[in-house]
Image (tube, rainbow, N blue to C red; front, top):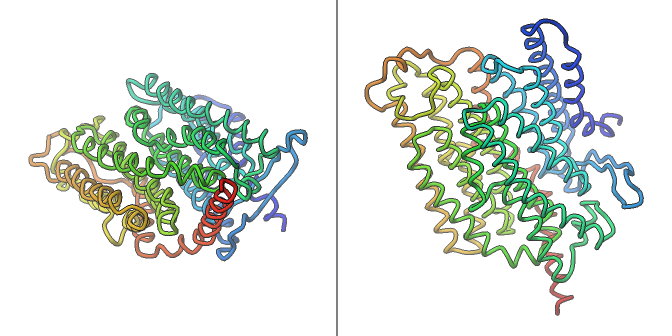
Length: 502
């Protein structure tokens, strides 16, 4: 019973114990760097193993929050340390704990300076990420949700590329602006309802026109975090300048926090506003899917192309979530999980060739299939997953979101479907130019195929893309009860609001 009581707190704060051990490391620079990497890796691997215990002990038939911990924090304002997981948050926690050790292994040889600080930043980031998906108090959620900005700002600003300071500040300011509006909305919500408890707020949505204003305040923060068009411009810059592992976490986990916020706050707490603004969000999603896909077609930088593809894929997520249908929401959640794995792996693939040739220009490669056949195979599977080939995880999410969209608005769904074609166009173009692009330059011809460490990082991700595409039921049966409960809360809120307005 003890593990049920404390597993979420241990999962959340164990990385900080690793930080403490890293701070105690002593010796010369080389020894400090090596031991810091070891401590970070062992800590993150242990945390991932603990998250698997959470998965095994999770009851897939239950829609309510599980492993709940609640302790009074500020009694005067009814703010509590309240943690719990349901089917919606479970796999985002697993994604976070899985990708952090992957990032540490991927950075093992590529980070040469301030290694201790780099590992500390990733462990602190892991704490904030897991805390965001576990928090069941709105104030606690806000602290974790915004805390993520600090280590990611440092990772981009210190270990990024030539324009790292500009990109780090742009990332920080964009997300901070949305967060200020969310903070104001949160304070109003607390003073109007007298509580910050998320399950209570989900059961008792706000009434009247205030709901519209609060929806906009929270939407501002979540839309930037996704990011939705037109507040997406920070993402390509952040990805291009971030180190490989920074891009992995940014695309794999941080972008999912906006979608998670929509599911936790927008739909259940502001149902009337969600229904009112849904048509606008549908068209913003369609614009994101089509426009950023067209922009991706014109990119010469691999990272920038994948970054724009991420905005397009997140367009499918917002489209699915705001249909408020079972297929749409489940598809949006699955799309986030799938994109987290595929985009993380694609950025790792970019890191593989960047470490060898120190350029991300697509034109500098060509015919890589000749001397890097294993790399070409891995990249091909991930590319096909990104375009949504049946049998890969990318297909399941896109198919379900489009099914949900067709139930609500056929015109929107038809336009969104064109994004599937455009996605195939830019990813196939990237693959053709990199692997079958004519004569291979001499420096690229000298590059060696995947080494043991790169196999260790990429093969599990490839297997997960295939496994989730072939057997999506493993995820779906755990997500479905929570989604049905969420839709029930949303519909109940619509009925209650309709009666009061009537």
